[in-house]
Amino acid sequence: MNPIHLTELAETAHRLVAGGKGLLAMDESNHTCHKRFAALAIPRTAVFRRAWRELIVTTPGLGESISGVILFDETIRDRLADGTPFVKAITDAGIVPGIKVDAGTNELAGHPGEHITEGLDGLRDRLAEYFRLGARFAKWRAVIVIAPGLPSIGCLQANAQALARYAALCQEAGLVPIVEPEVLMDGDHTLEQCAVVTAATLRTLFQQLDGQRVALEGLMLKPNMILPGLTCPRQETAEEVADATVQCLLRTVPAAVPGIAFLSGGQPSELASARLNAMNVRFRGRLPWVVTFSYSRAIQQPALELWRGHEANGPVAQQELRLRAQRNRAAQLGRYNPGPGADIPVAEDGDQMVG
Ligand code: 13P
Image 1 (tube, rainbow, N blue to C red):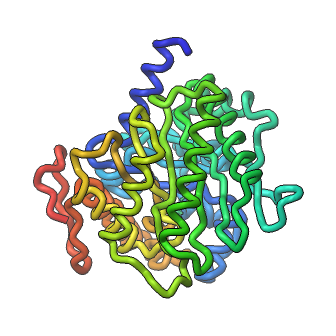
Image 2: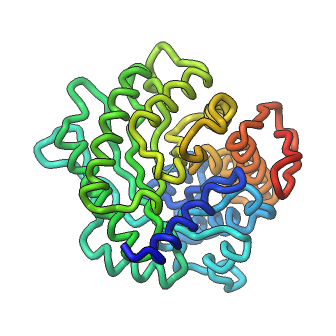
């Protein structure tokens, strides 16, 4: 790869993880967005999708804690109610716009119960367009299921290869690829089983990234934490999760990768922050990459529950969103304090942060 091009990618990747900040995923497909709206009796329309996303990106002070937002296709082309393009509002807030480019998952032929992520056809042209629209990074999510006899090697390989081809196309287009192989939390599997499956997933992924000549300095990894299944009777402490997660990542993720930004995957917001915090408390200064957050539900959900589609609730929902973002920034710095609702002063250099 052209060295100037790689320098730019590496700079963007570093900017996304610098200063204790992390990413906010707001790239739900219409289907997923409507599922979350339906649970709160919010009308499932384009008008409400836009209103919610406008509320997010116009949250005062969001850029103190959030380095980048991941948008869905309809939002990167959309405008706020006052006519300002979303991308301009985001960049004016000091936040880097990103874009989800996968086309969702479908059943993997010959592999009952497993899925493959689609969207490679026409991707080169779509990436060029997203770059013109202002995106500087992209996201592609693969899902891996843990169940008796699963995942299969075929599923790990097919998804890793799709992720690697996507990543190579992103780098060619000047976009930092966020590579997201998500081992799902559903099921009663143990933390140890999650560790084994995640390690196999990441080893397969990095082999494929190498095979497709992806520059590790110019990408970000978005993995799951090492967690017990949601219905596993034994639920480990934040410290045990932190230790298992860091051990797995040290064994599988090359040091050249600048940053690892976890997905929340349905963890309660406070737990997602506490577990990230535990990693940064226990291992700060001893890891080759920055570990941060790229949460959707763990940042958005408490605010969405306050908003419920009512304009009058906007300010309180924005306060909650800002607070969740601040708390995750505190967790990135190993300074998270799960006390009830106290506001968190944020210093520019992060030094006076108490949250
Ligand atoms: P969650 O944090 O809700 O898992 O979402 C992250 C994401 O971007 C999923 O692709």
